[in-house]
Image (tube, rainbow, N blue to C red; front, side, top):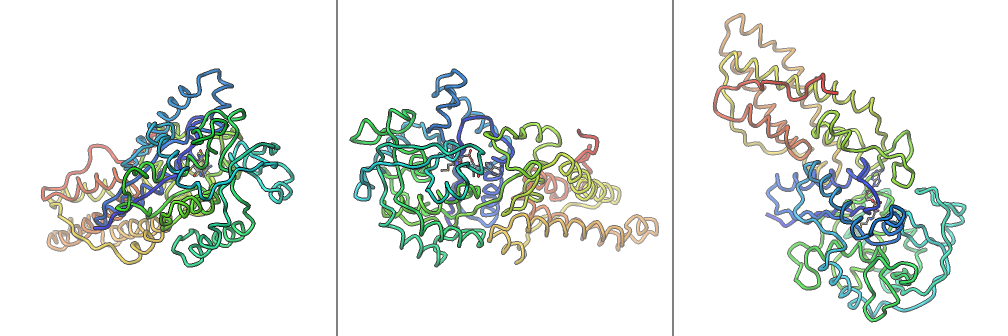
Length: 474
Ligand code: MSP
């Protein structure tokens, strides 16, 4: 049994969760469940990023206290995570006292690599990011993700000396000791790393009071990304506890828009602390709405609760894990969602379960206990985080069972009285469906459990009183 630590990006709490936020959770959860299927001991972090300008200014606009606003929205994210059936083990808020105190200790440990300086350059509130002149010029002064002009900042900042770590980060990336997925993002990151200047890691309190105080300088507050990235280790108890049983993380799941923070700032912090780098940074694409990134700042968000109400949580997991490609951008539309539900979940899988269970019941076929070895292709796709591809392979197996039913026509065997053959044919189908259930476990845990309930006990198989995926659900 190996120890596996899985991390997700922690969302800002400047609004409600939207369907794009589901991706980190779903991918990480699929991996966590897959690891458990392999017998691993899994620790799985989720949380909320509550400091910074973005959260502060939204609370101000709404006329509520920022602490209260952050608390309410953090709760909404936690509710959302639970609704998605995410098998997390730890939930962290960056306003937790323990986190704040640990961040201050982290700052002190990094002090040999920190110096005071003056920042005169650009900032994007939406990204909570310092922007280089080169990026400013390439984007003509407007953030492509948030469609807002960059702000000019002239202020005192503390800096983390990136030159102390640049060569080691590059080496770790090139050697895949610190692996960036998908592979095509690796070169982008290496190029960016070459051009990255020292990293600002504080803001003057006068401009931003909502954050962790810099130890020894009351006029400065930590830059939100320093505080936020640290959550991955403070949640394990660093630096108060030895974290070596779960650190380094096996996999960190992040959106492509925040890859740079996780592949440059984050490893610089870790190297400064003398900690090993995570094994894999898995960066997923964006969920688009009419080919545009969905984001709170653009105001084109879809409410995940509405989507879940439409066809249920398993349908939600199904759509986002299979039809939103793991690594590239994909569109969400209600039409595609309904189509996938009706044609695939309800027809291919729901009907299959119902039909097979009914035939088994009529012919007094008993369930089986199944012990299978997961096949190589599945293990390899899941182990390389190719979840949507692995899901496609499972679907082929489902379609194959449907084809087998059509070809072997059990109802004709029943009519002809060849009960031995009928028995063999149905038993084999039950076996195949149970094995599909195992493969489905990381993706659709409730459906997998139902398949096991229906076909996995030694009693006569009984069809569920209503279909798993009713067609008329709207
Ligand atoms: N607070 C930072 C993360 C700090 S991690 C130490 C942040 N928050 S966020 O709310 O903007 O985004 C949280 C996660 O949701 C990120 O991984 C981001 O990429 C992801 N997504 C936000 N919108 C998305 C889509 N439309 N589609 C897919 N993922 C998206 O960044």
